[in-house]
Image (cartoon, rainbow, N blue to C red):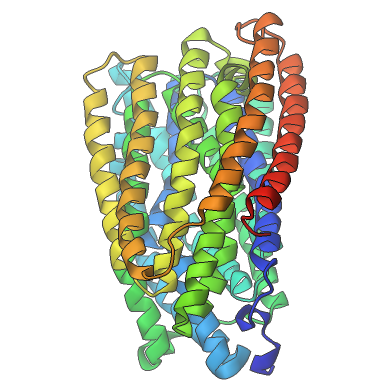
Length: 541
């Protein structure tokens, strides 16, 4: 295929970032909504038990390990490289670079899987050390070890799936890449519901049969396998499906990609390590892993349908401008992306922060419907409302640095964030083993994102000078629209309060209807006022 037909490297029209952002946000909303439902269902079926803590932390171990090996930086490193390769030698050259990177990654991840299986007892110990009863702790250690062994191969599956995602994003295709994780979530939800129906709900480690652990582990791995297959289909559809190749040693571009991935390991590894620490400490509170993991899921769900969706859509354009050394276009694309990211995040911040109690009331179901968890969860959601905006801005700044082939600053930002989170997490041990400890752990996520965003944006601002760093008129328009939205959010809070939505016995269905209807009205007002404000203030299209 001729290089001229590759849409990923053509000069995009002005609406490309907005259109692709909407595509990513829409399909990511589906994936993240099902991911959020997955956490809710697991909590409702397994309950506030130590086994629920062990399972919810254990089945995400492969994802955390994958994140340490490559994680989100895989696309950040690969997409600019594949875009450049296609621009220089066509789609065939893009497949060569992608195949070389795949060969290197699969070789490394295969060794990591073997190491994870060998260390599975140690991993299981870190997830069960908070169980106070020695006999229950010993059985929990055994069950969790079996679970880790069953899910360990998922590290390889995630590598292949994300290679397929990067291939699609390199060609400007975002829908399937963003939507395919929903299939994984649906299969896992069905697995947990079936296991709860057959074996029973709310079982703790003393009563959980080994057959249930086997069913949950195998079902989880089958779900990831389906996700991988869908991403490979997407890669084939854009002409970039290729076999892994060990010829990367003789390919200068593939070697460069591998070196950047190695240098960028810390960008993904430190946040994954921080999350592991948070989950391990949350395991000291019955049901605590549910609260922290659900808060983290909401954090990523909101940021991925807002600021992070924008950053993924903007990356190919930023990479193309950086490749051409076109500072004006790079600066313009950055300002547009930053403006869109903040515009998308602000209404979510206001709506969730002001309505965290009814939202927590909706999310806590089944075996997890307890005052000791709903109150802290509501506070955690208020913290997450702010964190999703900060994290999204950090992410688009990080994408811009990777587009310039700069992995040093994103790596440093991750190291700073890990240090902040580690100190805050350690301080949580001074608090009682109850909801206050969980709130502190989620606040640590916000503190880490603030530190990381400050590190990245400070360096990026120097890098794009003399270009302007942000578009003040667009941000002013967003603030005006947010002020127009605030009364509707306040009315939602008031209605939830007088109808009992802020009490534990409040009707969840009524709460959901109120939040859904109010959210649609609020977002509609936000969009209308934003359009008017942009025209009046003159911020652009």
